[in-house]
Length: 201
Image (cartoon, rainbow, N blue to C red; front, side, top):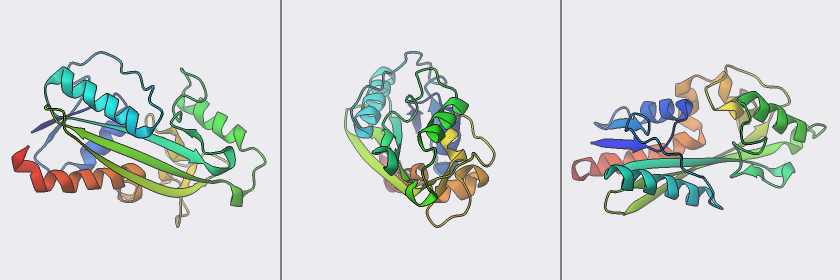
């Protein structure tokens, strides 16, 4: 079985391949599948964006597609950036720009008030139009300085410490992060779903 992942984000592509590697499923990025169009993420919720992306890829490829959308919600900032997580520092903002902008918004905010959570929504979309939605959420806090080893296009890993941990996601190995992260939780649900139905897909 082939699944086309509606993303060009190398960090996300790596994570999903790692998390689904035990299944007899080939994961292709949109580039690998020959889909060159950009998909505008103009939904009002994570679910709307993930549905739009997965539907577009499934219809374009006539195959199975998966898409995700992730938001960082910071309590002290009225849950911003939310669905605008990758765009709130500007459309062409670099990973460093996103980190610096986020930390500037929290300047002077004490440790106990820097609570935040990540939420990921993953949609599996069938060629016939049926879809399934899986989600994952992890609570934590935003640190004052970036710490750890950067992952491509996953800048917030450097400034987010999950609840109950003392290290940022960027200080963890891929395996450690995937066990507890928002995307890891959502993809684990997807993996369990696919494992039960793999022969039917």
